[in-house]
Image (cartoon, rainbow, N blue to C red; front, side):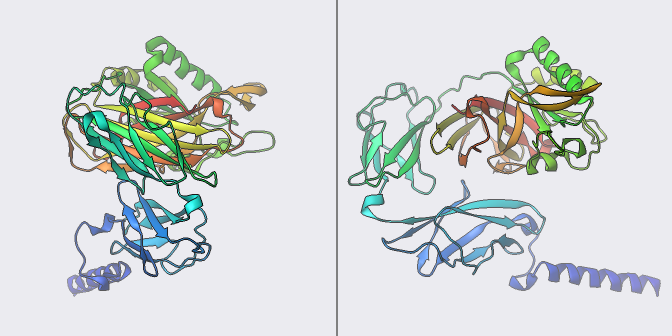
Length: 445
C-alpha cells in the first residue's frame, strides 16, 4: 500500500510539473527547458528581422509611423516566458529590451529597435566594396555590421573602400580613404537631419594567423568600502601582480555583500551582476582567479591566490580577444566590437562577458583605526554590457582559427570619468566550472 501511495504521489508531482511548463503547447521535449529564443516579432503586418547572433530585432516602418504606441505580437520558445509580454503596448522611440526566460531560469535579452524611414533621417550604408579585390561586404543592417572574408595573405593594412550611403547622407571616414582593417573599423553615417548611425566593418583573412598576446589572468576581488580588511588584501593582490607579471594580470574590484552597502558618505559601487557573482558569501575580502576557487566551492582568501595565479599564467593561451570601440564624449554612447579567435581545437560550452570598470575613484574607505576619506579605489566594476554571465557563442566545439564577432552599445553614466574607464572582456567555458580561458583589457577612449 505504501508503495502504491508513493507511485501515486510521484505521478501527481509529475503532472503538476508538466502543467507548470504549459505542455499543452506540444508534448514536452527533453532539452527544451533551456530554450529562450524570440522566434517571431511583429506589429500588425510588419515583421521584425531577428538577429539571433546579436540578440537584436529590427522593425522597419514607413515614414510618418507613430512608434510611441506599438503593440507587438511575439512568439517565443515553448515553456519560456517573456517580459515585457506579448500584446503589451510599448513606446519604441528608443530601443526596448525584452528578456526571455527559459523554464530552467536561464535568460536571454533582446534589443528591439523600430526604424521609421524618412528621407531626412535616412542613414544607411547601402554598399561597401573593395574594388581592388573585387569584394563586396556582407551588410547586416540589424547589427549595423559589415563583414568580409578575404583570401589568405591579403594585406588589410591599406584597403580602400568604395561606400554608397543613403541619398543626402555622409559617411566618416569617407569613401575612397585607405584604412587599416587589422582590427574592426567604425564608420559613422550622418543623415540630413544630423542623426547618426555607426557601422562596424570587420575583415577576416582566411587562414590568417592571429598574433597571440599571451595569457591574461583575471582576478576578481570581492570587496567593500566598509570592509576594514579589504585595503590590505587589495594591496597584497596588487603586489603579487607587480612581482609576477604586471602586463598579464588584471585585478577587477567587485563591490558586493553587506560591507559594500552604501552608508553615509561611503560610495555606492554595488551592481546587480556583482551581487549575483558574490552569491551567498557573507564576508569580504574574497577572490577568484580566472573563476578558480576552492574545491568546496567557496572563493579564495587573499593568501591563497598565489599558486592559482602562477598556474594560470603558465596555461596555454586558447583564445585571442580583439576589442574595437568608439566613444562619443558628447552623447556618451559607447560602441564596442569584439572578435574572439580560437587558437586551439577544443570542446566546451563557451561564453563571452564584456565588463566596464572605472579606475582611480577617490572616496571613503574604512581602514584599521578609522576611515580614509581620500582612499583611491582601483578598477571598480561598474557592470556588464551583456549580462552577469555574458553571451553563449558555441556549445560544442571550436576549431583553431574559428572567429566569433560581437557588437554592443551602451551609454556611459554621466558620473563616470570616461578617461578612466576600461573594457574588460573574458571568454569562459561553462563545461569547465566557468573557468576563464582568456581576458582582454582596453580603455574606452
